[in-house]
Amino acid sequence: MSVHLQRELETLKKSLLSLCALVEDQLESAMDALQNRDGAKAERVLQRDTEVDHREIEVEEECLKALALHQPVACDLRFLVSVLKMNKDLERIGDMAVNIARKAITVAGYSDVEIPFDLAGMWQKSRDMLRDSIDALVNRNARLAQRVCARDCEVNRMKKEIRQQAEDLLRSQPQRVVVWLALLAVARNLERIADHATNIAEDVIYLIEGRIVRHENTQ
Image 1 (cartoon, rainbow, N blue to C red):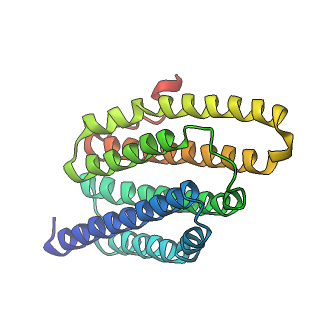
Image 2: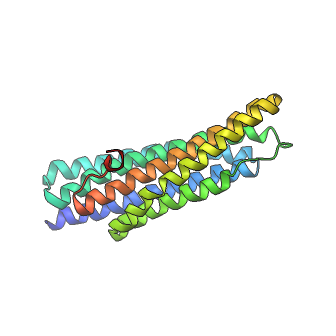
Image 3: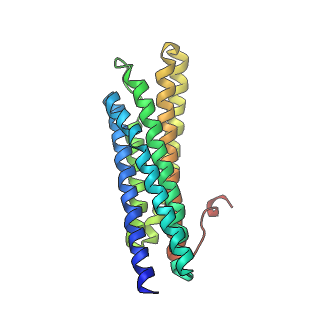
């Protein structure tokens, strides 16, 4: 590997980790805004979304530049392909944070309604999956990445439970349909965050082992 390519790959890794930190901060702020009925904080999440988009474009451009200038092969090529895919997943997670912030603004108008769903628990599991998928990348830990993939079904189960609870509340308290639907949408977004964390973990496995595991559990 050339010194120039090595330097560019290290820069790319730092850029990706920086984007991940920004996205996680957006998620933390969105969930805090929801739980504390803080509409102003939710609005700030919306305003910062352009920063996430700009960072995503910068990482993509760095990847394409490295591909064009160095024509890497083997593990270096796998790294660039993986970064491109992870970069897109992180941008989509940023979109989930925006969606949650929008629902937080809606829920903020219902200060008398307690949140009856375990969204905090679901958020903790999704956040931990995201953090572990990035740790797996940093430490090149395929086993940790595999454990992230295995935990996705738990988040899916929690989302199904919340959906059932929401359906029950929609029947028993239809006058609060707006808030129940908003909270159900938050659960859907948390599930999608876990899905994207799983995608990142799968890309880590591909990066380390050269093995595509995306459809292994569906065969």
